[in-house]
Amino acid sequence: MLEGAIADQRHMPLMDGFIRWAGLTIEDNEETLRELIHHRANAVLRWTGLDERISGSVLDGLYKLLAEVLVDPEHPLRGKIEEGLAKLAQDLQHDPDTRERVEYMKRDLLENPAVAEWWLGVWERIRQSLIRRARDPDSTLGNDMRKGLAELGDALKTDERLQLQINRFARRTAVGVATRYGEEIVTLVSETVKRWDATTITGRIENAVGRDLQFIRINGTLVGGLVGMTLHFLVSFF
Image 1 (cartoon, rainbow, N blue to C red):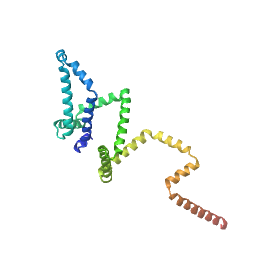
Image 2: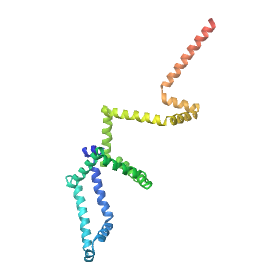
Image 3: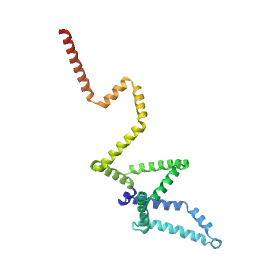
């Protein structure tokens, strides 16, 4: 997915958003950063007041760098970030050490209850944000999502290879679910049907069969009538 996103330049909005987030984060934590530089500076710098000038220069340099990266699509730092993302995509697919480190981090995170609780809150905020942006006609992310869904719909209709892969995945999933939870599914369906009364069963059959149910009723009436007449004829004359 990462490799495909980079190839289609779909990572650019994410990179822009990250750069803006970095700038806002620095702005919100300016005092903390200044205090950190103040404590790291030696006594001479603090006595002369140069630590404040150094902290101001560092922060101004960071703001300037982020602004240049944000407005310049060809900025060298963007290239470095893209190189890093491309290497990460390759390593995730082909480097056993990288994959093992990612698996270790994943297991460690999943086993931490505090992280799990925090992630639920993050996911809810992300979900709400995506919904708002998807519904906003002026949102770039919303347009990209709608375009992506449209392209996916076209691919599902025309790409036979994709159709085959999805069908194979669906079959394997269905077989796996039936094999693992078959008894529970049968019990659930059986208990549910047992609780239905005649009105519920009739209504569900009519909803499932539709207009064909009327023809089934007519056919049943006609066939039943003909069979009854035939039996009556045979009994009466023989």
